[in-house]
Length: 251
Image 1 (cartoon, rainbow, N blue to C red):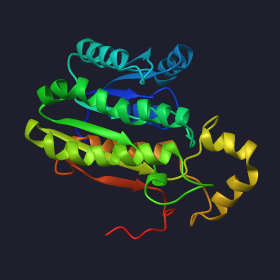
Image 2 (image 1 turned 180 degrees about the vertical axis):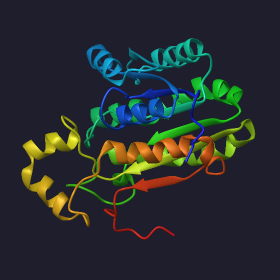
Image 3 (image 1 turned 90 degrees about the vertical axis):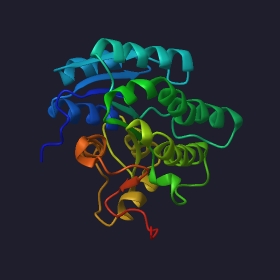
């Protein structure tokens, strides 16, 4: 299937590794021009060199609203427009104290809000604008040792995207979410959990119907479709990508 992504201009936060990087690679394969950002310049430089093609990157703290807006506006200027905004950056696994809640609030939720505010008019000029938020199945059902700021703020992001799908449709902008289940990649969260909490890691794998965790590429394939003109009539959706891991029945 031709997704119609050739020539599209894409900005991805948290794009230097894991799911964000896999989405960048998939977009590049489809002929898009991509700009990524992440907190560390070294990681951004390594990702840009490895990805090759029409890709550039910058070190940006997504929790800094002014820096995020400047990056988005600069990306649109350098690429000659903006068609797709993918918000993948996260403040981490979270916790229950004030510091953890503030960290996830500033990055996972306000990074989305501020990013969309900066990108909106650029996306409207596209005529085929698309916003994609990367959330988590942990926002949909209880997961792990207990509640956390990560779960709560990702749930807020899903709700915000649902509202955006209604208010931005008249501008030709679609807004969707994907919620991955456990995704494994080298030096990623589940790799860290594997070393630090082997019983929890092994129990999670054992509890998965497929007996394995997903890959960033499996998320990227769905993400690319949702952002593409091939999904022109899909908006306001939260697509779960978990290989059947969640047990809820979603009507």
